[in-house]
Length: 49
Image (cartoon, rainbow, N blue to C red):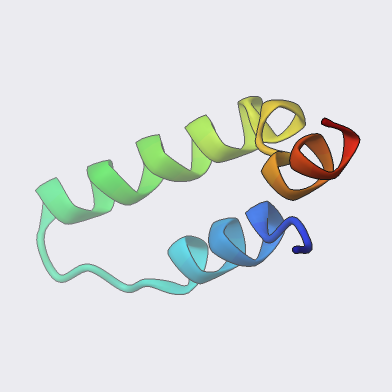
């Protein structure tokens, strides 16, 4: 299983919300994913045991 955190971040960043609230959600989610990317290596962690 390969880590896909960067693919998820990219997909969220490509999302084009139509409301201000949606844009704020996108901003916060992208920020969270970028800040915590080092913690999202689930596939690598699983393989390491």
